[in-house]
Length: 144
Image 1 (cartoon, helix red, strand yellow):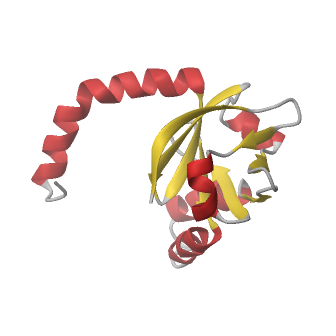
Image 2 (cartoon, helix red, strand yellow):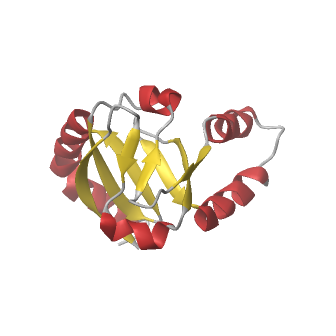
């Protein structure tokens, strides 16, 4: 399970060091793709295969399905984890999530999210203020 929050640096060669805590679980190759809320998602190959299968089973006749599949698959890239735990973040993905030198990597159960440090800080403040309301809504649908 991927959990926790870590601040790291993207170097001038677009390499990002993954938190040591995550490296063993992630393996030697991961998939990085545009995420939601202006971040990037990173998945193990096994988890990416599950997502790929579910998305591929969605109807091609529905515009929303086609659009979301394009969003996820067109921007996805395989990233090799080097011997010291770094990945290369392609420039187009770095630009997509407005990643500067300082980024925040968070573990969200089965995926990592890679955020611009300032955007994450602002987002987190908003969500923390709504946590009680969000919990109540989840409780109403039987999640909590």
